[in-house]
Length: 184
View (tube, rainbow, N blue to C red):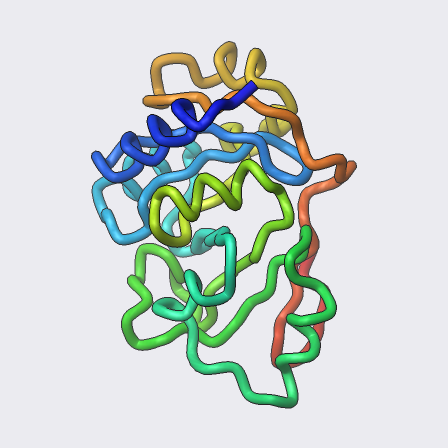
């Protein structure tokens, strides 16, 4: 189980440009510093995922997401308030400062305020949002244990933060904030 030392170590690896695996609401995730283009490129290569698809950012609070998103209009804020923190990812119009390697070929960015306590501690220790994508190569089943992460990805990652999953059976839903359309 993760201790404060393990969380600090995972945050240090992120700050140093590394890739970590960590438990999320439903599966193990892979993460890196979203503002480090080399780290994101390495993660995309590991996943065999095209950059155009964009990445999900996970955070402990909406404040940690603010650099990446446009201000939320009052008419949409209630959608976020009803689902966050929790296993709900929203596509929100990206700010001008949101890197292309995070939003992909989209004008929106996928973001989530997690209810997973370990991930909240990780984001707070790191000091902001981190990339969150399932721990698997494209087309493979996402890892639900740290052992499977090690078997599938082994030396391709720099650190594995061990912990319990959040109890969700399926990966988070993804919805458009503006249209409320369910994407996944």
